[in-house]
Image 1 (cartoon, rainbow, N blue to C red):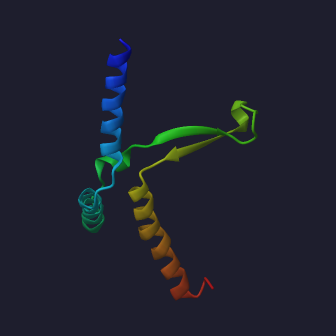
Image 2: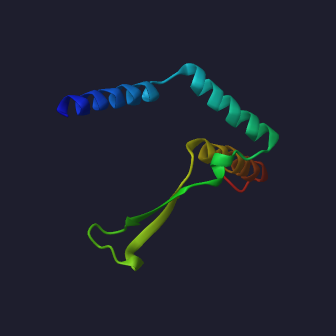
Length: 100
């Protein structure tokens, strides 16, 4: 029984290390896919989902009124919003002289 568990854990560890190994090809594919979506004005399906998290404002105080809610989104979605809204708005403000 113990040997069977060790073999299973060994297989799972091997699979986990394969999945976590960075691949330039896969990274390039994901970047290309996100770039094409941005250029075409299309939203990827994974950008429509997020993870809601409630954090304590003060350590140990978990009253509902003392919790902060945040929504975690995909990193490339956050970057796209920064590019579209952040830089564009800044350029607009600088061109009108409203920003230093």
